[in-house]
Length: 410
Length: 230
Image (tube, rainbow over all chains, first blue to last red; front, top):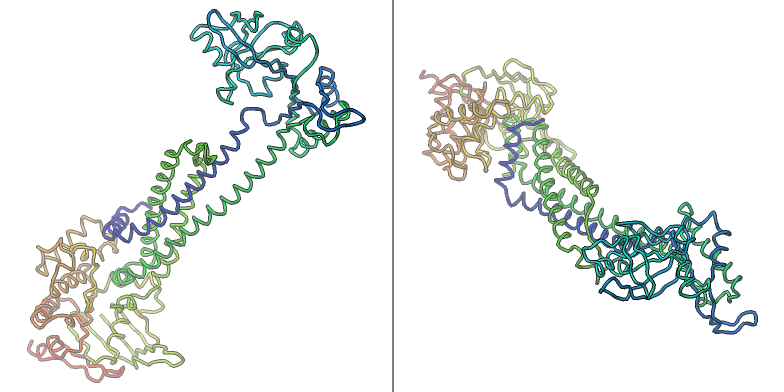
């Protein structure tokens, strides 16, 4: 296959006819550049959508209550609804099969002090499952466990930035901090992909908070992680079911959206996947359109080029060139040009995407636009194939031209 | 070397067909220097194309070097052309982006000769036509006569059985015409069969045998004074 003489002929032909070669290469390079940018930007949009929800688990349902805004069953507007352990336990029992993780939450803002350093942070009282619901990553020590809950221990898990604020480089695990006047033992440090705010938080056992700060069994919010085996539609139905159930138990008007709000990630997931599907569809359509335009472009140029060279082919044939050698030469030249030009377009596109980086995140919802290696390899294969086709069809025709006809065209 | 018996060729023109060659009988032996004379439309170019395996005949027999030419596909024709025939065209037909030396070496490339060797052989032939110093020049840097000399060297480089020259002096002035014809004469003196097509009486007179063609048939076939003188 590797024929040095053939390559020499091709390089000479490309080199001595630079304008022609550059023109045909440019079409392909431009098509691939557009293709790469398009795919990169689409990926960036996708990344943004996914990133917007990466903070919490994708299968979370949050239940929260506020004052009623509609009278119901003789009860007045403005009645304060309160979630309690009773509801938490009821949900856990009733929907055991559909729930993977469950946690009650109480939100507090407390000052935390270690030696001379002190600051106010958001402190949330939770159950152990909350680690998985919020995708908390323990970097040192451990998260809260059932024993902490049962013993109502004064244990605290602090975010990476709280640790930096209060302890700096010093170790924090096993040290005691002062939280709103009570002494807590630091048992773990965590990081969170949700960003800086999420890493300036601290978690304490729910039972401890109920005992110390309220002497009651009130809770502010219930988070559920539904069973991942549920389909998106089943999960959405599950959210509605819990909502109806709780409205009945807490005597809330069925249409009172404010009194009980259920935030189901399945709704968002469904929305995202619909948007992503539409996006992929559009991109595939436009992307393949761009590629096809590129292929047609190079085919046209090849037809023109071959017409221009028909006399040369006639001479070559008169001198003893076989049709296959003419076809081979044209195809090889075409593949070479498309491959190089495609690679240039791809590299330029990738480079531009890397320049864009995250700079469009705020205004245009594009996060880290890039193309995957699979797309790159796929596009390269398409390129080589298109070079083959673009060269082969007109070359086959050129090889059929009788030398006399080609030589006569003076 | 070339033996033609009752050769016919027609070209379709719409529904009708134009009968160009109407039964040609011609025998050219090895070492002959023959010219085909005729006005335009006499069928001389068609005859050359058939002899040169650039076109196919309809009827009759054509033997090239003793081999009956029949149902040739493009590939076989290409091989035979490369092996037995050398072409010289009126418009030179050199490849514009190749140097004189590379143009001459091209038939050897299609013969499958290694690059070093073919450039060496090509250089020998370039020297033979007196253009050794012009080896690295492109065709557009050469004069008409020089171009035709390069074309003749290219026709000779594979050491063919016959050199076919189609109006080799058609694009040249009288001085260069003479030098090109002298070159062809020299080649013939070395034993090469040379087959020239022309409409110029002066050119034909410098060959050894003139075959006159009119309306697709041979009207005369005689030896020239040059040949008689020898």
